Length: 145
Image (cartoon, rainbow, N blue to C red; front, side, top):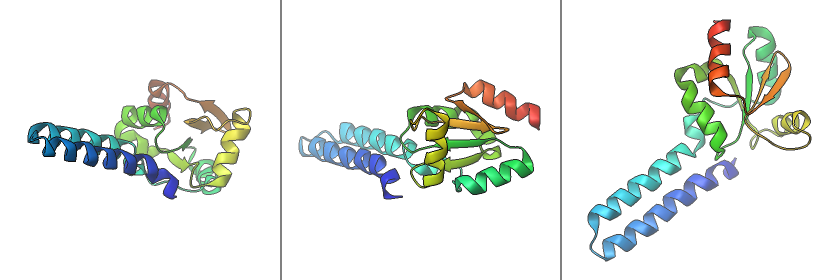
């Protein structure tokens, strides 16, 4: 669980260090801009922007019941962030599994991707799709609604 927070903490720490350096040079505006930029990067890379993660087994059980896809992701993944941002509010219709928090989820991703933990991997009706186009996922969600 702590591993998911390492990138955001590093962004926040780097931003604080750079801002402190700018403040000591008398550049308050630059310091504020740098700190805000690094805090934004920390926020985007944090698990907070994703819907609440559940375990892989629970996600698969729920998917069998309601037919909604399962998304395997990890914090800090640019492709996962792109998918999440482009889905907008419809991201809540998916079952999200953080592979850094769930060993069964990581194993499912490795099984689907020749031993690699390539994310996002979306499982639709038992069939995995690695790094699909967000437009395809949105279309899939709108057609099943």
